[in-house]
Amino acid sequence: MIHGVRVEKVVTSGTFELDGGSWEVDNNVWLVGNDEEVLVIDAPHDEAKIAEAVGGRRVVAIVCTHAHNDHINAAPALAERTGAPVLLHLDDNLLWHKIHPDRKPDGYLAHDRRLTVAGTELMALHTPGHTPGAISLYAPDLATVFTGDTLFQGGPGATGRSFSDFPTIIRSIRDRLLTLPPETVVRPGHGDSTTVQAESPDLQKWIDRGY
Image 1 (cartoon, one colour):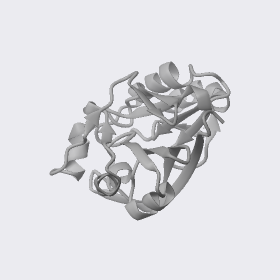
Image 2 (cartoon, one colour):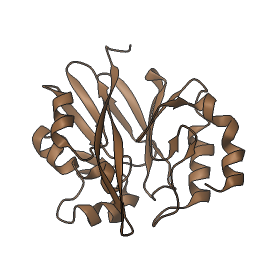
Image 3 (cartoon, helix red, strand yellow):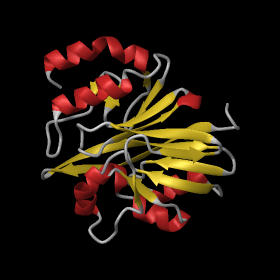
């Protein structure tokens, strides 16, 4: 553990809504920090449950991996409760404003932007494809990357809906995620964690199948 830093997971449940459809989903909320301060990665569905996991710690920021409703719908309420800024990639502004038309993000993340919590640095990686502004957060000291809906155990995130593109997500995964050290733990926005090493051999299979 670096500086007493740990990774915690909270699972919240609700609906994902896009293109007129609605699906029941469980979302992973990742907390990175120590006993004093914490970074929250994604804020879906249940602001009270996330705030309970935070406890009395200072929230450095609420980072949205992308702006689908099931990753941001509780972000303004959590920000109001904690006083933390909500950060998003600018390219997902349009999606954000479909969900929160009266509330802007507090700041924007660009590729290679660094965030620090409890003395540990996390690097924003622009990994578009699932959405135009999708990001992953890489924490070298923790040998982990938080991939949102870009890379899961078993393949890329979905690209069959508005604002998504399969060749783009493949480029993001190939050039910015599978180039990380093999032992890097991949912590996605839904489902189980995996590693870069476990997923790398299947890249061509995903390309061939087209999803």
